[in-house]
Length: 250
Image 1: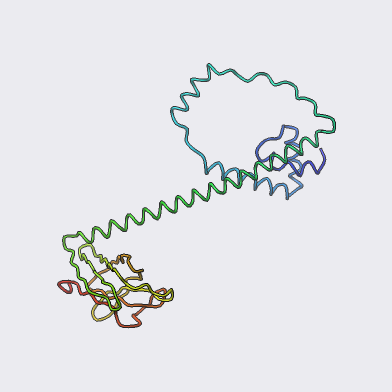
Image 2: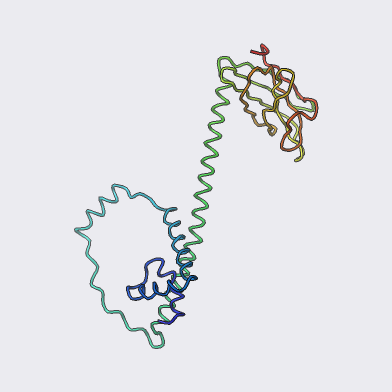
């Protein structure tokens, strides 16, 4: 086997497709060829990722069918001596063709495996997002239906309406808006607790979405301002709406 042949056997070695003599000779080659050693590691890592992405636990029914079939399925016939290669197709050429085909298959599997892994990750992210949205919706419903929930509503300067629901027992507030004008990308709506004469931020929000806040403490109401994108530490202008909690401070 020539040195050139050895350099083409990384893929076959990584998937255990070499015979015993070829394996021993290639392993001797690996001790003196860092490039081939690195390529083997990359092939094995790719194969491991593909296996973990599509692995499934066999069902009990499948195991039972396999065991039942052992006594009825014929064994493979004895292997016949390999046919002699055609004229001009020597061992080196045959091996190179085989390795070339194997490398092409591995490349195709790698692409498909990458797609499968990406789809799996996308599915997990989507599942996580849906789960978080469900939890948030459940908290909003709990606030709105809480026995101690109080609410207030008012028109918003510039258009639209705002409504706030607060449950001091749950220490939560839900701010709902409708009909608010769409802001330029450089501006954002921001909610605030009115707390002892100062404004305390409860976060930014988009028109038509609910703003869920906690840490009500002794706040007496909620206000909304228009702020630079990202929000502000303190209001940069007058509130476009102020909503006072019914009953004032606890």
